[in-house]
Amino acid sequence: MRSRLAYCLLLILSSFAACRKDDKSVFDLSPDERINQALSQYQAALTAAPNGWEARITTGTGSIFNFHFKFNDANRVVTYADIDTTSSGTPRESSYRLKALQQPALIFDTYTYLHMLADPDGTVNGGDDGTGLQSDFEFAIDTVTADSIKLTGRYNKTKVTLYKATPAQEAAWQNGGWRKALNFQYLGRILQYFKRLSWGTNAYDITFNNQQHTITFAWVDNSGNPHRVTVRFYYTSQGLVMVTPFTDGAVTITSLNSGSWNAGSNTLQVQVNGVTQGSIAGAVRPARVDLQAPRRWWQFAAQQDSYWASNNGFHVNGVDDAFHIRSIDNFAFLILWPAYGRQSGIIYDLLGYIIVKPDALSLDFGSAYIPPTFTTDGRIIFREFGTLGDVPAAATAAFENTNTQMIEARGYYLVQTGATTYDMVSAKDALAWISWEY
Image (cartoon, rainbow, N blue to C red; front, side, top):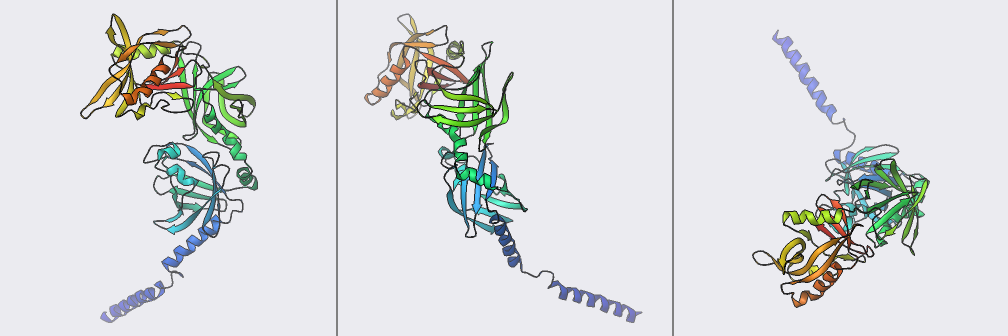
């Protein structure tokens, strides 16, 4: 019996020994060699698209951008993007590399258009300082097929799919097709507050935000109720497409195709839904005036015995803080306080300058106005009453220019932009306005 057990044990040990000898031949390549082989295959896939790759990126903030990439074997990539008229028509070359991290990764390692979306400087992309538009420039490689490559951002988890471009798609970037689609950016040259989209008998005031890729439609319905709807859009080589169509009763807008820009009249020709000819141009008054907005704005703060505030003062002729109130020493913000006080039997409004003091905020000086006039056509008109406090010599120009603008004879339209926010727009020419928040 012992002899048979010993024989069986010998067979088992021999089997294990045989397995150990065979383990050395399970893989033909070392781990490093296998990784390098995989990276080489990914690079071959990237460079195997003769017309480059198309990509559509949705950032963490919800904005949608199109890109065109063309990779070569020297770890260089040429990029176009529909961020602005420069990036959509001027190729930018940078470097890229493939690296084995937790999984193989594609890294755009020098600054290019892709980095603009992730730039933490909010002035670059319209996002918040510190986070930008919450996008990526380092991507884990998920899957590779003959016609597509799927990527996931390593930090913000941005999902990107590269699709092999056709000759026509590449040509649309190279021959200015995409750049023409971004003619909407010229709307920034319209200096009037009101930018009017018109076609047929329809008209809407719009606010266009190219950095965030949003359009806000503003209108007043037949009952006098104001409406504002903001929709996201993405570009195509023809123009822009609404992520969610804009609707107002029987009116639906799914797309706006970009036409020619007339620099003389500052007018952009468009096609609504790819069919109907229309235009976007500046206007000096709302498409339909919210007749009750001035009184609603004034009474809201008066009833609270409180004020409206503005951080930057008046925007005039395309210039923010046109009168440089932010240059006043220790300036904090501007206030409009309805029915602030009484003098000589007159209740007056106050446009006050809030100054930062070592231990508190202080209302040091301001302009007083007699009770405003509310016109039947939806305007508010201010008339000067006097000056409160002593205006510092260094603040005199900012103070006087702001006061002169406030008492402009034709007054202002009030546009409600939120539950407790309004824009006050010059009825003279719509070239000056100030934003108020409560």
